[in-house]
Amino acid sequence: MPALHFQELNMKTLLLVNLQCIVVTSFIPSNALVHRAASSLHLTTITQTNNGYDPLLPSSVYSTIQEGKIAVLPNFMPESEISLLRTDAQNLWDEKRFSTDALAGYGSKGKFDVTKDRAVLRLPQWKSENLGNYNNRQRFGNLMGALRSELACNLDRPNLATGAATTMYGKGSTEISYTRFGPGAFLKRHVDEHHEELKGKDGWSKPTRRSISWLIYLNDVDWDGKKNGGQLRCFERKNRPGGRIGATVNGDMQIGWLAASIIDPHERPVYLDGKKHDHGDCAMYILDGMKRTYISKAFQTNPIMYISGSETLVKKTLFADRKDLADRFHLIEPPKSRITDILKGDKAYAGSGEVAAVDEELEDVDPRGGTLVLFDSVSLPHEVLATKGKERWACSGWLHEDQQPVQV
Image (cartoon, rainbow, N blue to C red; front, side, top):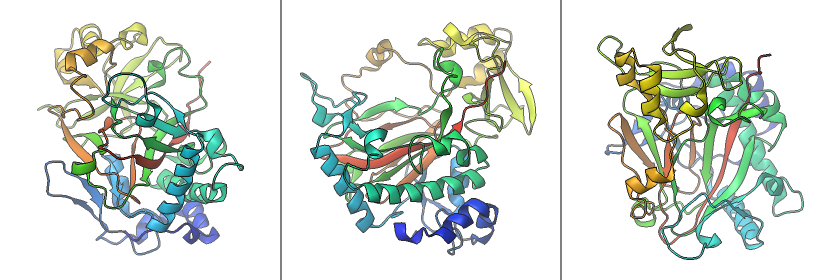
């Protein structure tokens, strides 16, 4: 895909994306296909783009995201633009404008070292006119705003491009920042968004929620994952899901999967209907087209879905009389505890990466400069493997949708 310069995003392009996005995909030639590298990691890389009418993304990006996989676009931005962003990020790091979140590990013992952890330039600093290369960050925001509009149309997620998700927080992306991983830093397996019912009593209080996760890497273009580490490891579904991943059209978020069976040959996303939005009277269901089929009785999420081992508890309590469903059901990402880490032997983990479950396949993405990655925030577990002797830089963020309204 030809590298994209900020200046190419003129007003005509933005109008095409925002007002005529339904036309965009009709101009994409048949050779805009996904190439899956011949390796055990099944890397999904977009190797060809469209004929110029679609200003940002080829159609294969949308189908890849809709299958619950990660879309990888090498050389999405040229080295000249990456260099401007990297220089800005480096200068702001040197000026101590970053915040260390202590979420990453770095495989060393002793006193906490901020230079080895993950650090983020938070949104207030990103938006500040008085810090660093503000004008370039604004231009980058324009790029992400155009990309967001295109995703909203072609993923059938119109709420990506309307409401509080576009008017609050950062320009172009609801959350947007620079991130830096110090040498040795890694981030354990997780998902970027959870159902409101799984986030405690304040789960429904936020005006928006994460929908699409994205990163543009600011490292050298010759980054070698085998030598330098730092890969983004994704745990994709081995079988293509038979349904809409992440959330339904009305905003009910996915919490799990129902594995395929002889009777039902499709793996199905499982959604949670929060109903009263008061941590009670919830139920799980699947969709067949637009038809909703409930697979659990009504229940309260607290404490059944808040504790380590909750998947087993769910099966025993909600599917006690349906062994066929209990055998097929599992959560996207069950809650974890310190005991979970101990049982896995996390002292020996040190960022080397988890293995895939039997119904998953791995995809490792090298964080080469100029590469754009996009994936669903709800349904794709992922982790960051430990860097080896180098800093790992990126622009990263999340495109939000407005929270579904609370029923009264």
